[in-house]
Structure formats: structure tokens, C-alpha cells
Image (cartoon, rainbow, N blue to C red; front, side, top):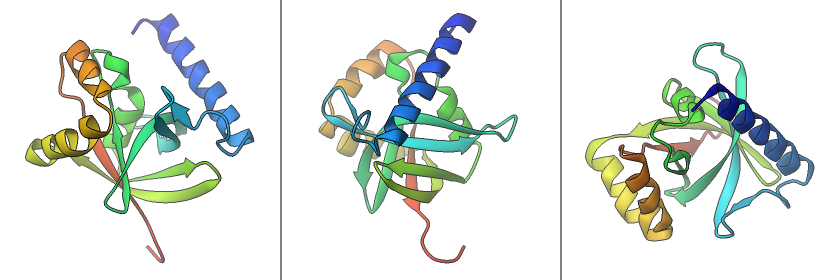
Length: 148
């Protein structure tokens, strides 16, 4: 993505995140009318500065799946690159906050999650994969409970 596009994308993420927070998810908590959206905050892999992005999620196994589709863009989104570089993140779903453990699914595990959860729930992700010409990454986010 060119620098202007990256700046525009970052600005839109900030605006959408602010709208989501200020309305406790009454606005901004759905994508394409069917998929729930969370605010995902993860430390930047280079700066360590917390970065927040609104991302579609799938409930699965007591936690959440997030998919680095970037709408079919040929590169993984920055938020996913940051997520892949850490083992912890923070999520906000409507008015609920949670710290989560991060696990990037690979190989057969990733393929099963893609086929059994992601495209079963939202076949539109197949279009993103076709457009992207890359294996779209998936991470599981498991809420951290009690003492760490």
C-alpha cells in the first residue's frame, strides 16, 4: 500500500475505534452487516506502542478467531503482523474488555479453522483469499482469566 493509502487507512481505524468506544459498540460493531467487530489492541512490533484496529472476529472454543484478510490486499495487515510478534493482546467487544493470549494457527490447524469456521460462517472470505493470492493468516485469542 502506498504511503497515502496507509495514512488514510490508519486515520479511518482511529475514527472507527473512537466511534466504537464512545458508543460502547452500538456503532461500528458490525462489518458488512453480518460479522461482529472487536477492537484489538496490540503492541507495535517495532515501537512497542499500543495500536488499536477494528477487526472482524469469530467466536470459537471459548475465545475468538481473527483473520488477517485485509480485504484481499496482497500483504498481511499491520495489525496481524504486530499480533504475530507477541503472545498477548487486549480486546474490547462492545462494552467488555479482556486481555487475551495470542496463538497464530499454522498448517493443518489453520486450514481446519479456515474451512470449518471462517468460510462456513462467512463465505465472502473466499473472495478475499482469491484476490489476495496468499494464505490468509488466522490467530486464536483466548481470554486470560484469574492470575497470570
